[in-house]
Image (cartoon, rainbow, N blue to C red; front, side, top):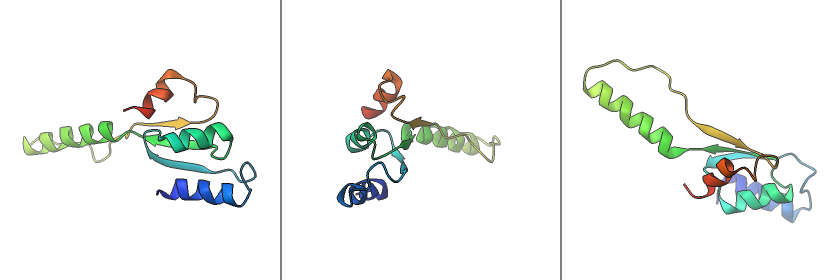
Length: 97
C-alpha cells in the first residue's frame, strides 16, 4: 500500500473525506486513485510516467558510454490529475500504460 492510498483510507475511515485537501503522487493512474478523485477524497494526483523517465535515463547512459556529455538535469514527464481533467482521454490513458 502506498502512502497516498493509506492516507485515502485514513480519511475515509475517520469521515474526513473532503474536509482535508489531499494530493498524492505515484506512477500512472491506479484505479483506487481514480476512484478517490471521483469521490472527492483525493484532490490531486501527480502521475509520474516511469516509461518516459526510464527512456530518458537509458538515452543519457548511452550518450555517456559513447563519450558524449549530457545535461546535469533532465525534465521528468508527469501529469497533474484533478477531478476537472479526469474525464480527458489523455488522463484516462494513464490508467492503462
